[in-house]
Length: 234
Image (cartoon, rainbow, N blue to C red; front, side, top):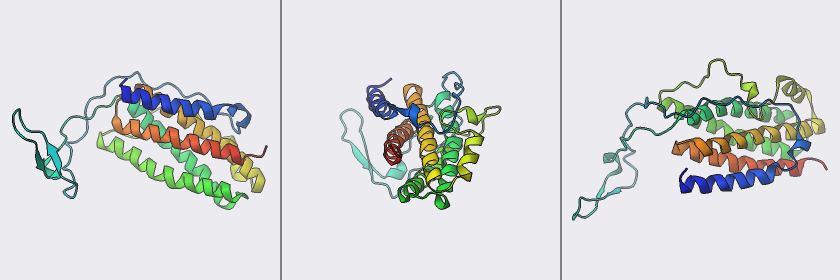
């Protein structure tokens, strides 16, 4: 683990641990433990050849050979032809986070005409605005590497934080204050699962994009967990 990755993981873990104290009292649904992903192993490079950099990007400083000065070159002339560096745990995280986000969007969509508290509706809209585009990022990551989004035989209901079908039916049937309370408890648990998944991949993953994505998920959803706890009645 690099020093930078270690510092990121330590910071994310500190925030996550601080925000998950007392989480048992907030459980609104029952979720199973996620089945462990496949053993970490460097995946073969299946990504198509990288495309050129946008010509509108700023110029790049290219170091010269020994005794020569560095030179500026247009960004579209400089390409990164190194193969992508990722492993099976990066791929597992990306594949699992797509349906995880999709359930969060389903829950958030119910708040539009069911929530009584304006702050709950605002939170739900924030979740929709952030996690919708994030699904696109995750799918693009897989496509760039020639990987499929599906995992044959995997039960997504066993992922951390995923809410069972019965809990989702109760949420859809609820209205007003009952909906607000149920939504906040279920989404808190859902976010806690995402934070744990992100923290796990930060320990073992290799891909820089996945590292940045997981760090963002862990930090932003930890903040939202704190907000949801503030909204819950004492």
